Image (cartoon, rainbow, N blue to C red):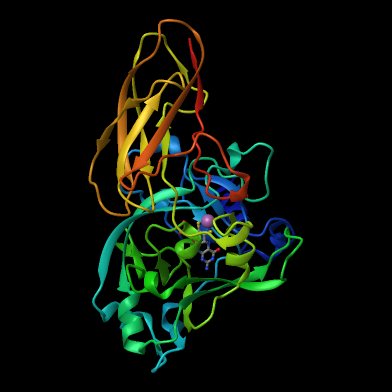
Length: 387
Ligand SMILES: Nc1nc2c(c(=O)[nH]1)N[C@H]1C(S)=C(S)[C@@H](COP(=O)(O)O)O[C@H]1N2
Ligand SMILES: [Mo]
């Protein structure tokens, strides 16, 4: 191929040539491919809107590099120009106001490292198969976020005494097509109680020391530490203080589970991440030689309290304490390892881990269907082969 032809086909491939309009309309171009650093090596679960997960077996750092952080989008990624961006604070407040990104960056900031897990992480292990993106182990990451405490913003607006919830609204919208109870065209939004909003939520404009990337919420997103990812609203453009319970789609139908503590099971919004440990290595279906030293390692987290212990088992009955590694930071994950020696006979084996947090929560061995397609933290062993 001549240089000219190569350039030509590349231009067409990128969709800048009118002659390729037909072909490029077959598959909508994935927004994150344009001008965004990385997302290299992520597993594509859905191309458009982008839903990508980290291959969890590649875990090798406490902080997840930005280009290895999973991407979960319900709608196309809104392309927001920082100059025209503004955040509105309104509702049950004394002085509603609007603030731009440059002004936000001048306010006193905070930096936190938190684990974020999608409530559907691990869904691929549910049998029979359920609705929703078929995440394996990689819809989770541990990222350092910088931004303004939401409490500071709410203080400035002066929340009224009757306020109970704070609604976080994203700029993205679309139709829900695969849900029989679909409300049609909607925005992505989520409310959180005032107590949580004023405790530790931040409005982040940086991840791992750089501006957010478009897929991760540029220019501004909420970070709700300890909660499943759905509460950390991306492309945040409006904060509305409410005095009644919000019943939006993403908290009453989607991202809700059946709570039985009130006797009859009632649909309740998902909040706190359940205690969980995952094995990064060995990899699922790996073939390992007999009588070989293997470093079994992975990560563990809980939205409730720090990790107290992670136990490892290669027979499903005896559980061995693993070594917890690295920093122990509130709301971050904890890395762990176990020096294992494979047995001296060949055949299939199952390896499992089980985490317990300092509040005494332990991973269950079985799954309750009340959790619907979320909060997947029961022990799921990985199968390997000794050769
Ligand atoms: N505006 C908006 N915010 C959103 C979402 C979305 O689709 N739109 N997805 C949520 C879900 S379900 C998760 S798990 C996290 C994922 O964040 P990430 O894509 O930066 O990893 O974003 C949350 N915030
Ligand atoms: Mo999610």
